[in-house]
Length: 175
Image (cartoon, rainbow, N blue to C red; front, side, top):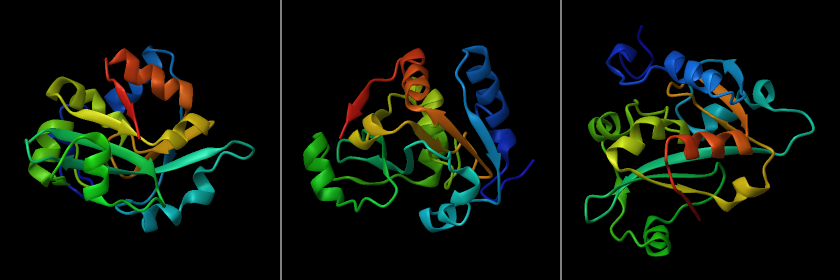
């Protein structure tokens, strides 16, 4: 099967396998199928389908970055937050931040561009990727993100996402 970004058969963990693992671990989510979403602007076109009425939902954008020392980072922040890479690098002790290439994204997170999300840490944890999450997540009831492909979104309770990250031994660095 092909996505808008590439052949998903080359991914180390498929979206279906990830969802099955979440099910096995008893972590709840609500799955939404939609057109490919590559940008925050694209995501805003389907927000009405994904929103959970009565719940504080954190909609995130995700940045796969490398620093000057060639360390790999995944940074997930509120989707409308302005990001200054120089200031972010200073805040997290990672000078010289730049965006990672599509090849490195597949190598270190096992996904294609446009599908970056905290759930990609299922591969990133084994590859030494550091994970940074917006403190706004601490106030959210649920968090909306891609389950490794950009034609699906899942909405997970904050506690279930944190339990997932704990289960795969990922330390959350709050920013």
